[in-house]
Image (cartoon, rainbow, N blue to C red; front, side, top):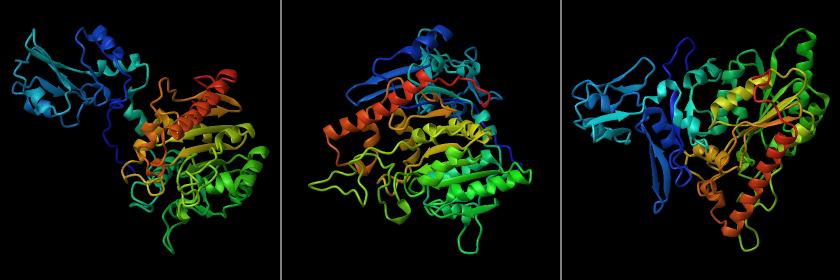
Length: 445
């Protein structure tokens, strides 16, 4: 986004298509109560299998509007496509034009009708027990990412790389008053450039895999000594975080150094040939955990680095995913507000090359990891915990693993074991949230 340009953004109803629990009709009931005739349709196709909800998607260029011969359909200033039943003649042209099934028809009255988002407070989203339906305030989200992109245009890393997307998103929130620290890994090129060509307008420091937090400590202390509030922010991979670089990170947390550390976790040493790291999921195939007659991928459970950092006494700890950008932005702001100790953000960063998945799949992988409880989203402020995106009814773990070739070898028994590990991890955070709760609205919100 170029500085000074304000794009038009709309709040919208988001639907996780096909993720509804079977036979759930809560959205339909809520819509009927609010609007007498339900503007949303619940679909159950067990033979597919498919269980989902369908309603108007509020297209930016609605085909129904263009097809209506009487002008009964129009967009308002908020981008909501509305249907004036008084001008509708019941011809059905709008329903034919809508390829998404977003137009409903009242056969008794011979009139079409459709969702109007309940004027920005959709009853269906409020009633949804699983989070499949969400009201996304896109305008507020864009305000979270209002800063210009501090990195050069084009793809510095693999096209569609979560690490690059997360890097750019993070520093839109963080802003220009920051120093970025990197270590050997995929994303270091985005911070430090190529040859004699810079890729960022930020001051950047290239560290070793073993001394990032130590160098940050020295710089942060000197900045404070001269009265500057410039934030020292690391964007470093899981190898230099969970493995060879864990000791200086542990020390910085224990000393309460006022630095922000973002780990982008692609679960391996992707830059050097897809070797396993401590955070690699159990059962995953890598170059150092092959699949054969005597081995079926990694045998150990992943190291829970965010939880370790919380128990280290870090001022603020959070997990994040680019599939939930509003959650990511809010957590970055809380991390920046932590001046009394280390703030640690663990960003889930699927690598489609190392994880053997399609190039355009990383956002969906990120979303499925949350929906199956493989990667719970939570935060801890000075030892008090909160799950920021509760998953009341998790999807089967197979909905996640089938997206990834590195799990193709797993059978039912291995999938069950992986699901139990995910459930145990989620329950652990859930128990901490119940025992040491963090208020829904705390000062850094």
